[in-house]
Length: 161
Image (spheres, rainbow, N blue to C red):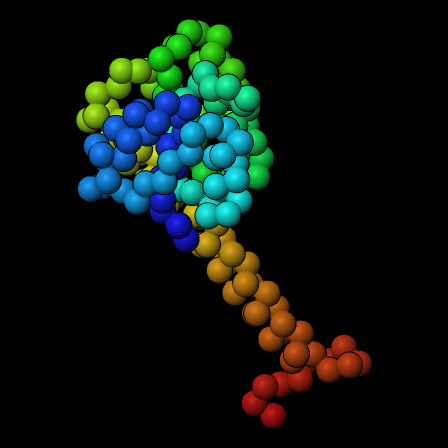
């Protein structure tokens, strides 16, 4: 499983700041807007965490995170915006099912904590899925073995006979 982080913002210097501040902690990719982020997710995803700006041309962060949620539901979504009004926060939570809503300027320590928590959440979700998959697979194997012990006329065949 990939544990890469994707930062999305229409301002290149903001993306470079994220990369510079967090590259020692995470494998980071960047995209300069919603359409570019979706292409990057299709080509290089899935990502463990996507951090998106809210106000971007062509596709805002809410629409981007909503689409990411629909296509890659395990990806943890974080909104980071300079436009932190209540309506935007509610839309991001309700439509994009975001994990955190952060406002710019965001202290590097706060961003590091949010992304680390998002990565931890991603690991929990994917580990739970793998555990459930393994449990289901084990149950199917046991049922198959039990059915193999039953003869065609419905009588149980003793394994030791």
